[in-house]
Amino acid sequence: MKNRVVVTGFGSISSLGNNVDETEQNLKNGRINYQTIPIERFPTDSKTLQNNQGFIMDQNLFNSSLDKDISLMVELAKLSINEALEMANISPDDIAKRKSGLCLGTSVGASYAIIKRMKKSLEENVDDYKLALYSSPKVIGNIAKEYKLKGPVSAISTACASGTNSIGRAFDLIENGKTDVMICGGMDIFTELTYTGFNSLMAISKTKCNPFSNKKNGMSLGDASTVLILENLESAIARDAKIYAEIKGYCILNEAYHPTAPHPDGIYALKCMQKTLDYGGVAIEELDYINAHGTGTVKNDSSELIACETLLQNKKNKTFVGSTKSLTGHALGAAGSLEALISILSIKNSELYGKYDDVVMPDAPKIDFVTENVYHTSINNVISNSFGFGGNMSSILISKYNN
Image (cartoon, rainbow, N blue to C red; front, side):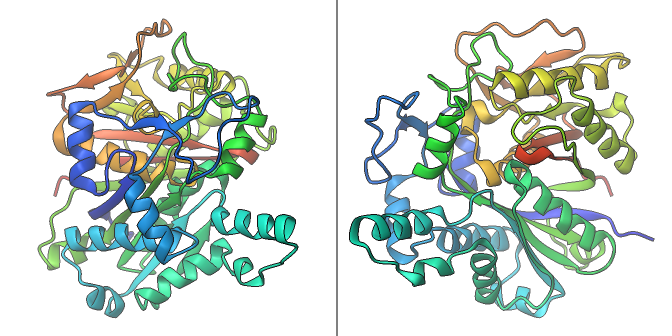
């Protein structure tokens, strides 16, 4: 018999705030932090850039974390993990003694260290080999070492599906009895490398992103380090832990269609969502909300919208569909975990979150688009999507916990 898997804690740093309380309040009040990219990060005066803005985390926290850790990733992950463990009422000493593990996702990894090494080589003719030690597996290993974890440790790098895939792998391990507790999530702080890379693909929006709308013209990048504590239900009950949600199912697949574009007919996005519902044993009539990948690019949005419309075509009532990237930007390898957190907060607070400009949404008879906050609405089952480059696709089913 497989174990039920529940969420007992979470921690987050993003443009929405330095912790979950700030995140929750800013979501409720529709406050976002879309601003000019600070010069301390990288110069944005090139005429080749679509714009010079992004969804930026607190710059003071950025600076203090960078002073302690050139990768940024270890320091920010520790802050998020500590918050999540405190919420779950698990001490760092206790997590080390438990049957526990770590699974974290990142799209690019420690690219601040990578860029610094490149610039030292080009500008000073010095190859700083120490900076080569900040590979994603090495960084994740250092985080595991910090918490003395003895269980499974995984570094997941499946492009923009990394954060959701990390939750899925943690879910697998607990469901099948390999661990009792998993720290999982994603980390990505966007850099000159990622910003100019997406800009070269003409994928950066000229304004704040407006996914699915008539004003969509690309993505906005954002920062995030967000982790969840997943736990065997029996373990959570035994220690009288507060349960915030249940993970009921997920699907990971690769559509093998194109390096950077999804299948235009959305057939694999549809398959991913349908298999997720089937795995969790949730009927389409019970689905309340789809937190879409919704980047704001024409190819992604058109493909995903077709998939959502097909999934919902025989449902009696409308279903809420939205992209919370209108609030956070695209946090790349951390997008899935940040969006999973927002989905959990939607379940917890009976609210949906969105903040669009003055837009027109497409005509979709079975879809109610979330373009602004929706209050006092019962949310029991959510699908959260993450679809990335290289054909990497994942969906996860997050449900209200019922004992």
